[in-house]
View 1 (cartoon, one colour):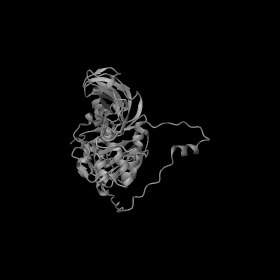
View 2 (cartoon, rainbow, N blue to C red):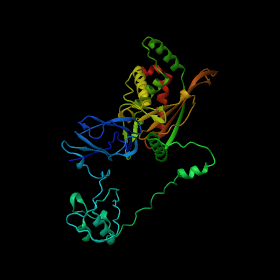
View 3 (tube, rainbow, N blue to C red):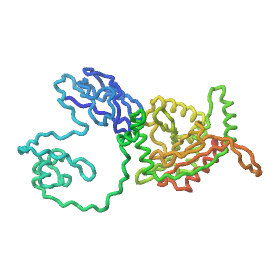
View 4 (cartoon, rainbow, N blue to C red):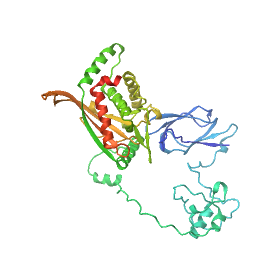
Length: 425
């Protein structure tokens, strides 16, 4: 029989996507593994494969359709020998609604009263009941979430509500949590600028996700900040010597490669900082999986370098270059930008001296890295001299990491950068 092909969840966090392009047309025969469509998530464009074999009977969603919810039917697949007459006249919704007709054991009373909307239990789960059962429950003042259904798959039918008695509603045990005032809507904001020329730019999927996640992060994560100045002169000399040796192979290490390595080693030295917040517990990771922010047009990715504490600097360098290139082309797979316990955001190459980064949940911290600047410093002999100094700020989730622990991590990180040969032993 005809079956629906549903919008897939191409990553654990995907809720909707854009059907960028169909790779098949109605009437095409497909087998398991054949490519059906290109789908854009908030992070990447990915190809969607067929699971079953059959004939494409109908395409329900057009090329370029945005905001298609996960599990929404996007096409109809016919079995061998079926034709278009097997296609339902209307495609079902992502969550199948109950039919408007009564169940075989019920007679629909003649009435023009509208059927009440499908209720939900206190948990948020939908309560399944026939239209007639919902009308009777509304007339009797019954809470359908408190009634056990005897119909197919626990569906509430007429006899269930007719034999139930109204239950008193429990008084709320506590006052509802205060809600933040809603921000002004788009139309309100636009009226403020109606006498000015402007260009209205719609948010794409990535920008919407970034806005939602960062708003959530600043509202729900108790951030605090630790700052440190680091002398880079030894590192710059050490890096120059290594790059001279790599010149024949075409390799070249960046300061960021050393920052990644130092972070990974420091996480091993202070393992309690190598952790993420998991709702009601902390997950402390063993390997140092370091995420690095990469700016792309319209947003950013945070590809993850796994096991960075054991990777040689040369491999960290080539891995980072590959991930950054594919991030800008939006060709990363979900497992390449999800995970990690710690992130680095480096704006030093843009001349930014210092800044505070927002934690990317569920990470326990993120390191904001500024530019190395020539500055006057007091030498060990008490005399004024100059040094290349880099400012870093560690943003910390106080639920995961306390102040003293974060300071211990920054001390270890500084020690590796100011004595770079220690990263190799």
